Amino acid sequence: MMTYVQYILKKGGEEVTTQEAKRLSDIALYGFIYLIKSGRAKNPNLISAFREFLLSNFFYNETNALKVLAEWRWPTLLLEVGRARGLIVESLELLLQHSLYNVEFSLWKDLVQKGFGAYLCHVGHGVFLLCLSPEELVDLLCVRPQLAVLQVDMLQQHVRKLDTDRLMKLAEVFDPSKHIVRGHLRCQRVRSERTFSQTSRSSLVSQNFGEMPNPEMSLASTQKMVDFFFDLLLLLNKRRDSEMSSANLCRELQPRPFISEHLTFAEEMATKSESFLSLQPSFIGCGNGYVAMVRNGDLYTWGKSNSGCLGHGDLTSEDTVMPVSRVETLHMLKICVTSVTCGGEHILALSSQGVYSWGSSKYGQVGVGTYHHYYTRPMLVESLSSECCVSLVCGQYHSVALTNDGKVFTWGWGVHGQFGHGDAENQSIPKLVSCLPTAKEIRTIQLAAGYAHTMVLSQQGDVYSFGCGYFG
Image (tube, rainbow, N blue to C red; front, side, top):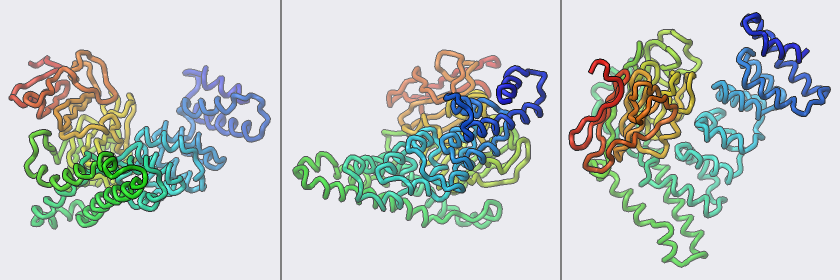
């Protein structure tokens, strides 16, 4: 029977209706499970065929498939299917529901590398992380340092069990002079300034957007990061005291530059050092029938929910009109949004933890490596994780980012040459515009994007443009 069902699904073509394909696919799903669990099938490649079916067939009921995989305790297939179909949260919740905590470390690491680490930390209040050894926990979180800085309490419990190399990894992540923790410090400073400068308007706006976030909680979490960093330094000093001379120790850890940079951070931000470009925030953006707005570090969207552009996940259906709503994924993960920009049906949000994007990625404009797909929840643009972005802009179907050292990255729809890469190819991940000058005196300082063209302004006042010139 299975051979017959698979043949119809592959060769049926137009003779098989969508409803018939759905029924046959569900039959095939349970047929595979029956054959594997009964042990009647002698084909050693049966599980491989089952995996291929799950990843290539788009007619079976995905929700039921995930439930069945969880019931039969197949966490590997469950996570693979969940990742492929954009159902990672649902997959993790099923693992939690069926107490499937004993998952291979390589699977968790793969999820984090693919940008799903935030969901792993959130589901079950991070219970999956608690099942890891201290060494595995550090190795996993350091794959995406933005996750590590949000798990200070968990790391604090295991820090004395770690070897010197892993302590050094954590010290590099939590160093206040590096852009990750520095981003949190900057966000806290900006949030505090807004809190005190906008007191007269807070009561009016809070009626429409909910209660203001507690600035003391953010300050406490930021203080924890800095305290944890100094705890790491003290522990490293103690560990290495018996292994090397104090001269070598000072040279290895370099505590003075760390402390020096940290103490001068406020002064550097206040004077807006000429070495780097400052943040160029945009607090409101508009797309095709929808709006996004930043307020006190949270992002709010409203309007038409085309292609998941509002970022509310399964809470909204396609082509519905939503009232003003906070993007809860960013809020729950304590991601402080500093700037937002909107394309036709996609959004880019700049935060202290990096660049997040969602909505339509038909031409790769979301920047996470896929085409002809859409994302209903914020996705971390991993390619920019090592960059410190200060400005983001969107065209209709393309995206542009500017870093604090004047580099420009473009991606998405490129048929009119609007990327400046010298070709007309679409680009699914951010790519550096290498033809622009990067010297301090003539580097790019500002961006703008239209429907199918891009413009940049240099330090000297020169304007460069590329893309469609049909109207001049």
